[in-house]
Amino acid sequence: MRKLNLFVIALALSSCVVSHADEIRVYKEYSPARVQYVIGQHDGDLAANKAGNKGGFKVVEQDTIPKDREDRDSWKFEKDKFKIDPGLKAEQDAKKNKVAKLADKLKAMGLDDEDLKLLSVRSE
Amino acid sequence: MKKRFLIFLLLLSTAHPVFAASQWTVGDPQGTEDAGTIDDIIRINNTALDRLLNGTRRGLGVNYATASTLTVLPGEIAIPNASVSVSKYRETTTNTTVTWADIDTGVEATSTQYYLYTTGDTDITGMVFKISASASAPSGSTYYRQIAKFYNNSSGDIESVISYRPDYGTDYPDVIKGRISFKGSGTVTIYDSYNVSSLTDNATGNYTITWDTDFADGNYEVVCNTNDTTGDAPRICGAYSHAAGSVIIQTENIAGTTSDSDIVNVIAVGDRT
Image 1 (cartoon, rainbow over the protein chains, first blue to last red):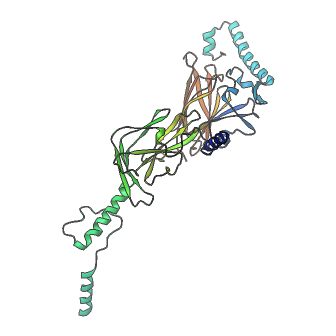
Image 2 (cartoon, rainbow over the protein chains, first blue to last red):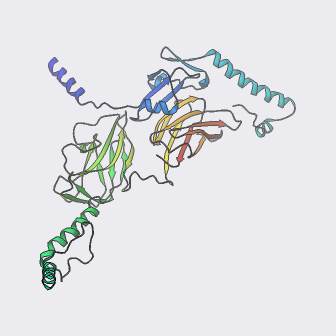
Image 3 (tube, helix red, strand yellow):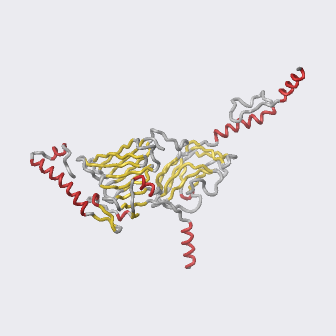
């Protein structure tokens, strides 16, 4: 029975087609980290070269990537997991606060939300 | 002098006409032809016809039907052997469903590029189709022509069906050369694409598209639109950093802040290499 199982496994492996599969690559050396989705059997290295993605990368599964993109601009990839880079997060929060403060100042001067919208001063 | 003239007349009377090798002479063979030349005339005309007919294909467009089937539309095709010494003509007058039962050898494999052939080995007037992972020839066939290709993705679903037009490979300037539709919010998901090898998520609302077949240079046109699924938070979409093999797409809210979008659609038009 064991010999039969080994034979079946060998037979299955012999018919496997070697090809470039769909893959997700995380390029760790960017701030924030970049995630490249290689489509179908396209050459991931060639696509990375065209996209300008350099340095080391890790191939990951979809469920490794955070679904919540609230802090997307602060993602870093360490020890095969996504984490929030505190320094990047502080920068992003400072930017958001700056816009919010400007909106508050203008409202204090009598402008309302519609006015701010016309001036493109609105953060979501 | 008289002797030479007589020898000249004798040579003229025995000379055979010379036939051009690459022509179809309208009206040949005529009833007034010398009986000894009819075979040559027919052969020359048939050779010219062979050159015209051996590459014939009409119809036989291939469409995606389901995750595991294709539909081939009616049409006719000439299927020569490798040496083009014999050509089989086949016709189908109805739609044909192609399934994985039509694979040439082995079984369906995921994450694999496949090619669809029409074959003429079976002595019938109808069509026989074969799916093969070989880009050059289906296994076990002498008469075959490749009419389409498709990709069987990691889930075993057929996608990216390309049905070859008779002038496949022509770079029409007025045809869309690349497109992609994707979800940029939550879990980034590529809905559909053509001539795109990858999508890189760089940051909030910022993505790099790479083309499978490059454009001639960075001078091509990219149009994109974007929105969220509820339609109440419109987005702006722009393209920049055009390069022969890539372009960057950025989506922003109306305040001008980069922002993810539920739907991003991109098309590109221009000259390709």
